[in-house]
Length: 185
Image (tube, rainbow, N blue to C red; front, side, top):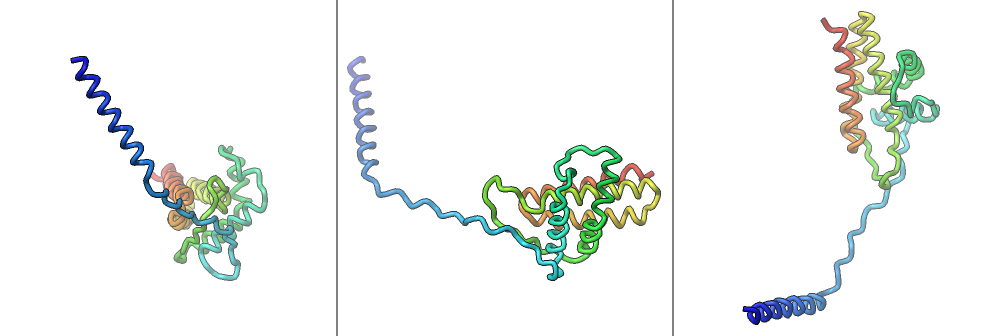
């Protein structure tokens, strides 16, 4: 039995060595795929009248302020009121543009590169949500519903983008929905 095991082990080893030698004679490896280089950052055109350009310009204006609120995660009620006041013009631009169809302009970017316009859109979305909640709590339901509709359309337009923009859009839609709940009977 001992001899049979040795013969079996030697034959398995011989097969493995033979397969390795034969496998080493294979053809050259395929050339790795060429990946698309990152495109330049999208530059909004103010005179185009495109919905996406209006959204991008609003976000660009917000980000250009270098406001401390761009990186804040948690806001006090007083800070929320300040942000809503600061975002009045960008919110008006987004609200006016949201009634038109949007064609999202996606550009490739390097891995881990910052996503253009995302922080501006996030702050505009938060301001729209807080304005919706404040006007609903004040009993001005027509204004609250108009703001909620604009924010919802803005959120759905953002879902046309990459995963991060789509996530932001879905979050905005849900946050606006939740902002209306406390004012409902």
